[in-house]
Image (cartoon, rainbow, N blue to C red; front, top):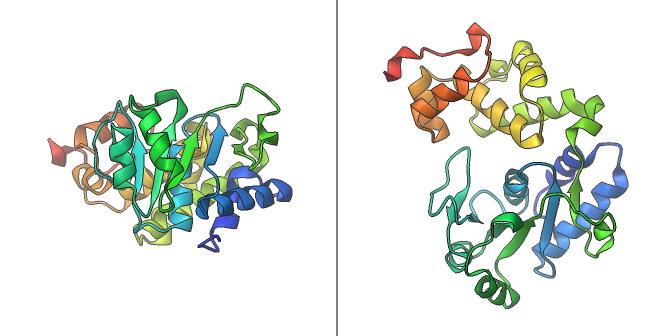
Length: 251
């Protein structure tokens, strides 16, 4: 049972508005995961964790825990731009009660066998596994079918709509005015920050935050970043002058 009417449009954004069969299969896969009858498997180019987090918010809801098991990141609280994490699989499982637990197959915890044992008997934790690209082209035939997100390079015709929808999400998330993301912002994202869905999502949110903040320090605080980290992110990109807040205030 899918908890949000917003899931189908989101899956269409991920998989392609013209691929109705892929969207229907993905809905069935998510429904099985929500009923704790299967693990939700996501694969595609780049980091799938932001996609798993977005699906969690559209199904179980933002008030339920979403925990990433990440031995490298360790124990972190959630922020606007990144989910909570735990280094241990068992600790992540305990923190994810009544919510979702997300694991990257390329970065498994040392106690992964213990985590698997806990998941087998669980009926209150949705497990999402991010596996990257399948090496075996027949793997998607396994049931329930993994959700395979196509690369943006194959969806250039959809790119403008994808940017608009992620910008709309960012504006809605912080209740910002519609003018917080302009045509210049859109063109800049398309030309400089559209290599993946995760990059578009992060960039649109940061641009909306920058346009609606008093200065860089204020924007960084709202994003859950250190001002120096946001400043370095800006320095690596050729942003338009109008996109830059007062940067001297954090120094």
